Image (cartoon, rainbow, N blue to C red; front, side):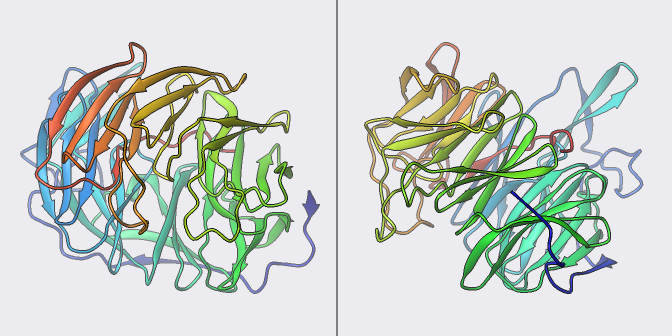
Length: 414
């Protein structure tokens, strides 16, 4: 844990309006929003609903999470990635040219001691954040950070503007381009990765004016981030970097090289689930061990699953349980405190990880106590009740699925 020496470099912050692409007619939104136009497709519902988005080679499919009914097919070209935008309604779609906003068409509005729930047709809003290499998207403290790996520029968008046709964004320019990440925290502060095109070394906290107030250089190969109860973490080649209570702390791997490049956190638990790789020379390592890092106590526990998994295999249940989709086709449900595998739920047939990371492989996404598993071989998606351990719904898809996600509201500021 290190306090800050001089500034990261000449960081600059500027605020400007980014022009958006033309938006499809009839883009749905609540009439009360100052940034949207009312749509005749908006309907008030009796209860809140969740919608899933799935990427494939032809674009996006939006599903009703309760029924797995297909609600919309949205054509888009190229390899697409999905990220939660943090407002409970939108997903960021990364593709050629930058980040676009997918309005999943389901949201709630608080009204005193209750909320009103709405649905509308899912659409791309037309809002665009240009990026040469669109990378990580992270929401927190009422803002969403979009990282451009090609320039090292971070665009910050207020949560209330994610559905706007013109995205008003503040910009933070980091000293050098790298495959990085930025996390908004309270007080208009920001945690950013430190690095160059040759690699990452750690993270720094910037205040609202861009001045560096804290840093740690103890995270070689920094990759990814996750939020836990009271903490934010970053994966390192030799463990995990934890930001908690205003300071950095390193939790070291038991191996000299013990990479935790992908993480899954939960607001219900201080423990973070991460993958765990030990071979720095591997072209494609297929690990069978996962890591559980206690961000409060600083402890680390390794759990051997007896099966391999991939970066799309990690998830967290509603009570904070750790869930891993193995190449044996099963969901391995782990108690995050004891590290005990408490159940094994067979979901799909055994499978093998493809050599190219962009190629479809089964993916796990958990929402509202249900685990959604994609099956590229069968071009389908399955809904698994984590409580009962039963596959409760299965739906055929029109194309081979790749990524799957649903919107959430970002947690409390750190």
